Length: 254
Image (cartoon, rainbow, N blue to C red):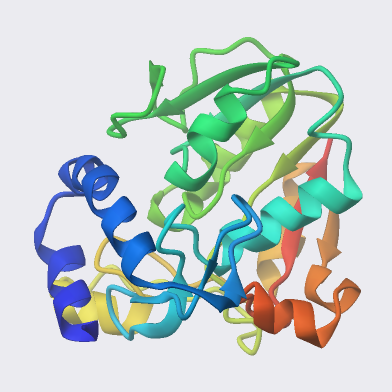
């Protein structure tokens, strides 16, 4: 199964993959129904989750129902347990909206919810993250998760996010993390897609962020909280929800 999923991820264009996934999830959810693991986003339980990864595949991480990964489930639990996101009116901008969240956030009537991306079929506004068409100080909440590692000029992108965020607004800027690495690694001389997937985790990533990511956000002007939310959950919950222990949520404020 791992080889099949890896082949699908690396051969089917992402916009088409998103459309096909809507047909596949009901079947997968039925086949894998069980009680061992639970997706907190929709509350459904399964005998196991699916493998996922463009380079090195991880076992038991992709929810059969919402297609959420560890980071999505972690963020959902954080928003649910530690913020007022699900109850308080807010103007929200969501970059490259994830399928696990898109319909659920859209259905929240107290949110003024807008999505943006250059290529995603789920985007309301087609826009370049380095040159956004939105006014300064516009959004209460911004989600930009697993996007910055695709952007050659991530400094400009971070500055644009800070510009359009309201004072005291919250931006959650998750990225693939290698927290054992002190410094972020980039090498544009590596052009082979397979080699890039091996080194950067995905063929279209341009860097691997290290611990210095959080300080870079601070240098841009954000106040950054490095939230290790898995430490606030029991070990049983971490296993039940198939989370990645020690993953840090970068919660940024203006």
